[in-house]
Image (tube, rainbow, N blue to C red; front, side, top):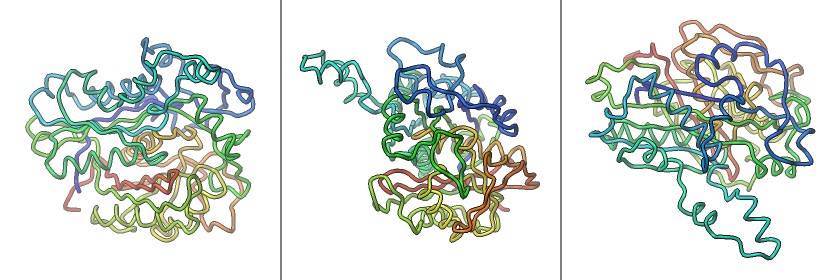
Length: 397
């Protein structure tokens, strides 16, 4: 697999665009924030990583925050790819978007009315049944194409990019818009608290004293093109998708399989598809939620498949963006490859001897880095991994 990335866009707590995120990725996160967009008895107890008020203020009527983030990242991706909407009119276009919150039945007023014994209008239910963020992108751009919305929990964004790359590789599409998006709302916010895996402090991935997740929100989008289509328009290369692996071990509704065999297989599959070996990988951007079970299973997998490869955990800077996580972290991984450095894993202070894994604790140069891995673990045993190449990567290397 050598799918060319010609543009990418991202919005998260680190910034409203790729340049702003690049600038802040290699700085310590100065403070945590607390929710003020909706009411919850937990709102001032559990810190989160929110998108800027500048972005939030741009939400249109009848638009979810998730779709707002998605179209913001999409607009940036199209701009960096130098693609106009007219360029997409007579070519085979695909859109594949990963999410979890944005396809949830999250109309709380409807819930309240229904639970109170009333008969609220069914429009929110009908919208839920019909809604697809991928299809909405086609409508937003006013173009024809194929679309797929991927809901594999926290692996959704990674799977979406992997599926999109396979569409290119198998000549299904000339251009693919792929990524993920999710927002903070009551369902995940209270849900992770009720699962007792949310932290009241800053998350500490892989740390001996880790005690849970900080949630975040955002979106990441890749524009991927066939070599023929990109060549015709002299498109500038931003990076490559070199390999994709996906497994589902079905171990438990929420807990990862302890030995990490599912994510190990996903990583090995992605590596095999890329034609690379572990020694060719400059670093791993780990899923690293900061929970006891997830970090334990993932560290076992990384020791199995990528022993000795440096590990960073960007969730320590963005929070866990749920269905968007894989896409946001793919964007951050590509930034790191192209900047030739990886950021410190924030809040890591004490190694856990049970894990045999110590993430990078300071910004680290990776000169001549050509490839990296971003991996994701989701509820239900969903596992996915991407091998990404830098803009300098050449197929014959």
